[in-house]
Image (tube, rainbow, N blue to C red; front, side, top):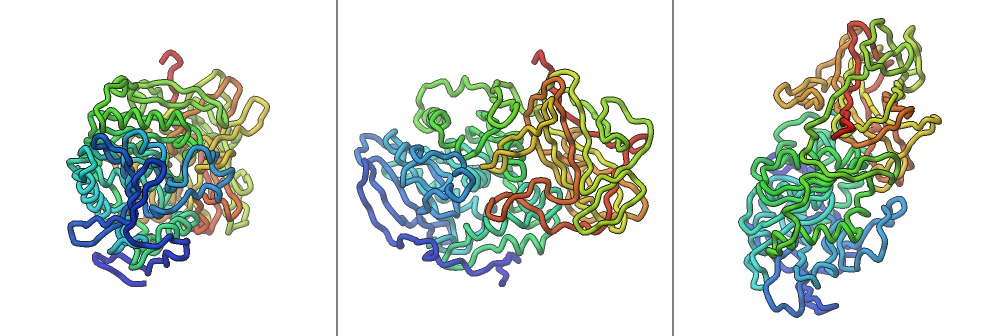
Length: 562
């Protein structure tokens, strides 16, 4: 382990040959109507070269726009969906062998008058320098690449960006640098804040998915940023994590954003935050409740991507400017839901409603609970019972809907909590749906799974301090700048952000809150999902309700006449 200025911990990159790297060196070929240039050197402003692959029309009657796919997974890297559950439902006929992981397929775009540029960022694979992931430095390199592409002899001067996850996250950073030739971006399920949405959920370190992710982006000839080690060294939101947040106020390029209710713990929150905060005059948002890769590559989605880029990169007079500002799916269960149009996000007509927790009955009430009560549950490291009502390893609270309701938007859970035998506690929260017969209702989750919740939330109690300027009644914004330890015998209020969701409940169906001291959804080790095995829990958790303890869930109810 070494440090590079300014105090970035780095480690040696993994040998590209481990991943059957196809070799390095410029070469050109003509295949399937495309000119394909491999390992084209692109100079950055400091003299370092990064390498790109370019796919463009073989018969080019006029100059074409360029689509940039920027990702550290390897511009040569084929699809990896076979390692995910059911391949993420991505069908093999939806992509060609030229498609890199989570990026646009050149075999589709090139015949339709586009060039596609696959990028190996600085420090990855054979590109020179040291890798810095999702950073402002990477955004600056993106500026240089966009400007280089925009003046190629085959380019019409318009450059767009496309792709999922890493390829979406970096679009925010690059667009914030305002490259003159960048004409449109299409971030498809990304992040806005690496600390809050990736490395520390509610201040609880995510240590299951991150190491797997980090290995996949660590192939290179030099040093790469050691993100897991940086997370250990930087447990609070500080200058390091701030460099991972784009200046959204500077993003003014036309933007087509796609988010999903289904990526709780990875992409849901950040994609919607990005849409809210960018300054673009032309911006559109779609929110679905399905699997992200399937959604990106299915034909109707690709045609919408093309319509968007045709308008802003080619000047095609189509119906893009008449698109509704927002389209969202209201889910009923796994892959069952209705999509409708809206004017804004969050929805202005939302009627927020408090549901008060009652520990004595394990229920939720639309009216305040007068009698004080408490419920306790064990954490994984503790087995002591206490006089409060005891519920095993979790506490849960149910609300039965008297009439149908649509809950679309942000939820907040206010809890009065106490830890017996500890000075901190990690809280894991799930919002779940049950049908009239008491059967669990599943939803798409974690990119590829099919048994997920309505929504998730997390909080390390010592991280409960709020940013009073950024917090809203429905979305607490945590500072994550210091630890406020718990005191023995003193319950404290904590506000837990529940990530956005969109779900319909019929009359007689049940909303359940689950609270426990560990991940609520657990899977086999080979299933790549977010996880938090390293908790701070060492005692018994107690939730207080009623009377002076106004524990409640705030839900976003959409009026039926909307």
